[in-house]
Structures are given as C-alpha cells and as structure tokens.
Length: 469
Image (cartoon, rainbow, N blue to C red; front, top):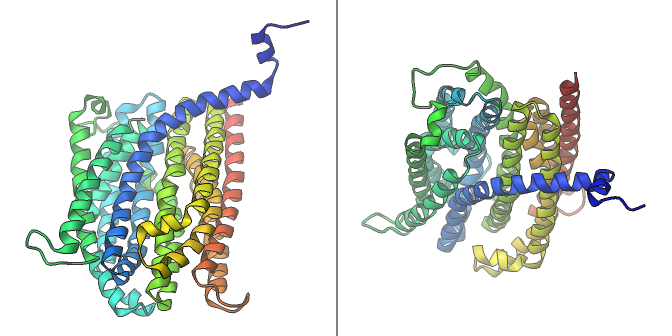
C-alpha cells in the first residue's frame, strides 16, 4: 500500500529531524551573518596592525605581538564580563520584558567602570612583566608604548560592548556590523598617519598601531550611542529613560554570570599571551611566526564565533519563552554548522598555508616557520569550533561557572604545562619551539570540547525535565 507523502514524512523521524535542523539553520545563519561581519571588522583592527607593523620591521611586528599578548586577555576579560548582557537581554526579550533591558544595561555601566579603571592601570604598568620574562629590550619598549596608547580607548570599548550586546540580545545585529565596517578605514588611515608619521606627526612605527586602535574604538562607541538614541526600535528598551527602573536583574546578576565568562575567555587568551612571552627569548622570528599564525587563526575563528553568538541569542529567546526543546534544537544545529565550517577552513588552510603566511611578511625564513604552524592550526580549528559553540550555548542557558572550571582544567592543567615541556624542554626529545605549544593547544582544546559538549547535553536534559514537570 502506498501512503501519501505527508504521512510517510510523519512516520520517518529521521526525515523530520533533518527538516527541523534545516529550518533552524535558516534562522541561525542569517542571524550570524551580520555578527560575522561585525566580528571580522573588529578583528580587522588587529589584522591591519599586524600587516602594517610587519611592513616596518620584524622588531615592530614582534613589539605589537608582545603588546597584544597583554592587551588581548584583558580585552577579552572585559568583553566576557559584559557579554553576560546578551543572554540576559535575550531571555528578557523572549519573555516579553523588553522594557527591562535598558535599565539592565545601565546597571552594566556600574559593573564596567571599575573594570575599565583596573584595565587602564594594568596596561600602563606592564614594564615589570617584560623585564621578568626577559623580553628583548627593543621589543619591550615598542610593546610598552603600544599598550599605553591603546589604553586611551578602554572606556570607549566598554560602552560599545554594552550597547552592542543590548542590540544583539534583541536580535538586532546589523548596526554593529555597519559600525564595525565603517571603523576599518578609520583604523587604516590612523595606522598610516601614526606609523609612518604623516600630517606633521613623528613616525611611531608599531606604537602608532595603539593610537590608531584607540581612535577607532572611540569612533565605534560614538556610532553605537547614536544608533541606540536615534533608531526607534530601541526606544522599547528605555535605555535613555533614566526614570525607568523596572526589573529585578541588576549588577549582581551581571557579575554572577559575566565573571565566569570573562575569566574563561581571559584564561584561554592568556595561554596565547604566555606562549608569546615564553617564545620571546628565542628571538623575533619565533614570536612573529607565532603571532602570524595566531592572527590568522583569530580571523578564521570569527566564523564559528559568530554562529556561536547567534546560538546564545536563539537559546536565550527560546528559554525566555520556555521552549526547551527548541533550545536543544538550536544547540544541535549550531554545533553541526560549526563542525562543517571547520572542515572547510581547515582544508583551505592546508592548501594555501604558504600564501597566507606571505600576506603578513616578505621574509622567506619567517614564511617557512609560519607555514609549519599553520599546518597545525588546521587541526586546531575542529576542536575550537566545537568548544566555542558549546560554551556559547551554555551562556544562553546562563550556565557559566562549571564551564569555567572545565576551561581552567583544559588550558592550565593540561595545555600550558604540556606545551612548555614540548616547546622549551627536552622531556619529550629535542625542544620543538612554537610547534610544541601549538600541539598542546590542539590537545587542550579537544579536552575542552569534550567536557563542554558533555555539560551542554546535561544542561539541555535538565531543561527538558523542568519543562515537563
């Protein structure tokens, strides 16, 4: 007997599941696309710094790299703490409490202020770290002045993050994309003026990258403030309505969720910072090759990171609406998309490794070293895509404390000690230099992916039970 096509579909759970995944992918990808453009434009600031500093000299590139190894973890800690705004806004918006989101973000300013002051103080007093790590004096001078310059942009980037996370939590992702793209020519022009000494200014070399980045951050902050003020769709948030104080979630809730997120991101980034510092005694070539690979990796990482941000938003909306089965579907779809992206980007990295290295430098010896690290980076991308997707999904559930412990174990208990022993000691044979650290990164990320994926499965099951109770 032949059944109608619709009846056959209903009796085939695999086909039904595939259709659900396909439907959710059609919602996730359009949401992630503007986020990707915004992330890439933000990463382009670092990319242009790396390329333009590298054109000056390997020492300037190494100075920016070492400075970035300090700036990066602090930047990500601030970003991570304020990232708590996204799932909190998403859940409020999903629950029909959009009018509470603006007051929530204003409380985020209270959280951000002390973090901004601490970050500025740290960036302006890092000389002792370079002396302790025996960083080459020429590199240390460039890195120190670079960090002092970029510290002027910290208040701007904090406010930008708060407003961007408000917008993205509402599902309004295009403004940050447009602002991010507009900041690229500002940064390129700033680099050209400050690095090479135009418009009557002295040539600053790599230090000029710090001033250009600070200028770009203030431009982005101003544009985001103007967007929230002028576009009518944001009026429902009551961000500028100081009399609006409704809502129970405030600074304590932001810190409770955001601190573990910030610490997780800082711990991951600090691994790369320490690697750069550990490699610095080996010379500018070792540091520069690592920085080239890391910078490229960060650009590629923006793709799964953007999908992951969309996962956080979609999961938050689903949880706010008490649709726990939908939240699990979002997680499954997002992780499948990230795994597929990693397969493509890893293949392209293997095929075009030499061309990629050639974008950053013309030094043949530096290209050779960087190509070897890019081959390892291709393997690194799979675990990275899975772990970032799982961590983002857990943020959508407002689960951040246990994932922090998993990250600490993966990176600090396993990854860093293993990398140090492979790279700089003869415990496993001849010291491998930067390659040893990248091998350990692959292992650490794989452990993190497994642990976070397991945690996500458990949290999703708890959500289902609560919805059925």
